[in-house]
Every structure is written in structure tokens, then in C-alpha cells.
Amino acid sequence: MELELGLGLGLGLCQLLQAAAVLALLLLLLVIVIAHATAGMVDQTRAEQEKHFLTASGNKEPFPSLFDPHSRELSVVVPSYNEESRLPVMMEEAMEYLEKRQVALGYTKKYGADKVRVLTLKKNRGKGGAVRMGTLSSRGRLILMADADGATKFGDIEKVEAGLENLSPKPENMAISCGSRAHLEKDSVAQRSLFRTILMYGFHFLVWFFCVKGIKDTQCGFKLFTREAALRTFSSLHVERWAFDVELLYVAQCLKIPIAEVAVNWTEIEGSKLVPFWSWLQMGRDLVSIRLRYITGAWRLESPRKTQ
Image (cartoon, rainbow, N blue to C red):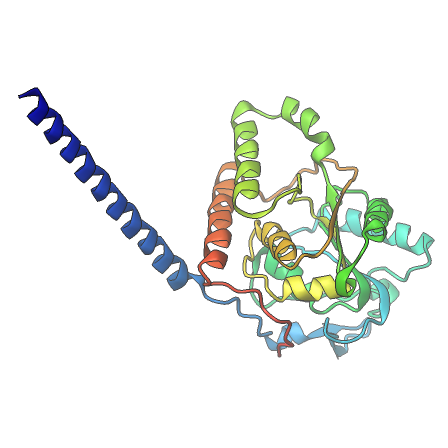
């Protein structure tokens, strides 16, 4: 009786495990199908108004392309959406710093369109989409991505420049230097609520587990690219919202592009549009999607191609 009972339990457990394995396989197949069905490609076609900028006299001039040879030493891409109160502070600081380095920069009306050009998007493409469009229209040998709030002092460009120069070798002259706030994490944790701290560490874990290894702070909006690295990474960018930084660095690591992480100064600026819980939830979803869609072939590393 005991032997029969033992065999019965063993068979029942075996069948349960088999059923669980089949269910897991079906679930995986369903996730893959959904990933492919919802992946799609980012529409990089420009609306007519996105092909031109206005000069100081109000005339339309065509934007250059990242595919063209560089005609400036540095381009600065600043994504901006409803930043009327914070953008002027950042622009004035950047202008003052760059003027001291004898690099032409200023507001379009004040200094002319050869120094500052505004790319007006027809629709809201998200921060990632805005940075991509601006980068693909850049003239610089180096391209700096900087946030409109000026949370990182513009003078810290010297730090990321040094990080870029110290990277060796640079295959096909490709390299990226990322500003980092990781050294400030202990102080920021002390000022955050327990809930926000848990969300932050949870996000860091998902970034490490699914996408990017070896970079402590993927979200600092102060990154410097060689022109060649910008062309390769932004040509493959799909995510247009907050997690686009992660995809950029994931693509860079897949392409074996050297990446430096450099500590920069950072100050909390009021007016952020990032709602902690919902934005991080969306970013967590995007992280899973990035990894899943690349490993299943729904997204691929794209060869650079010029778009109209």
C-alpha cells in the first residue's frame, strides 16, 4: 500500500512538472509573438518643418546630416519640451563657458543661426526621439547630449572630454564618455524616501540584469559621443522615451564601442517631468522589451542609413 501510494505521488509530481514546463514554454512563445507584433521600427522620416531651421533673419535653411563630414568641433544637443523656465539658465551658462573657450554658441536671434539652430519637431517624439533627431542633424566632430535643466554644470564637459580621450583603442574612431552621478548615490539615498530608494535600486538591477553591464549610472543626461559612435548607435535607436539611454549603451556594448564613465557635478533642479513610480514602471517595461526584442530578432542593429 505504501509503495503504491509512493508511486502514485511520484507520477503525479512528474505530470505536474511536465504540465508546468509546457505552460512555461507556451508562455515564452506568447511573449515572443507579442514582442515581435508590437516591436515595429521607429519612423525616422522627417516632417517638412523638421528639415529646416530659421536663421536670425527668419529665412529657412536645411539642417545638415550626421552622414556628412563634420564642419564643427563640437555639437551640443539639448532636448527641450515646455522648458521655458529652466532652459534659459542652462543656455546662458553653456554660452558663457563655450565663449570663453572661443567656441561659437549663443541664441539664434542674438548670435545667428551658424551658432545655435532650433529643430522644431512636428509632434512630441519623447526625449529620446528629440535627442536622436538633433544628433542626426549635428555638425560636430564630437556631439554632447545635455539636459535642458542644467543639472550638470556645463564646465564638466572637460571631464567627459578627458574620459573620451583616455579611451584607447577607439575602433573606427568610435567612443562614448558618460557623465555619472554614481558617486553621489549615498547622499541621494539619505534624502529619498524608502519607497523611492527601492524603486531606484530595482531599476538599477533591471538595467544590469537585462541590458547594460559595468555602467553604474546610465541615466545621466550628459554624454559625449564621437561622430562615428553617434552615427552607429543612434541609427539603431528604437526607444523614444526615458529608457533610450539604456538602449544606446546596450547597442554600444553590442558593437564593442569603448565607454568611459566619468563623475560629474549634479544638482537637483525643480520642474522635472519624471513622475517616479509611473515613469520608472514604464522604464522597467522598456528594459524588458529592449532585451527581449533584440534577442528574439524583433529589433536588429541597423546599418547607418540616411533618411529623408
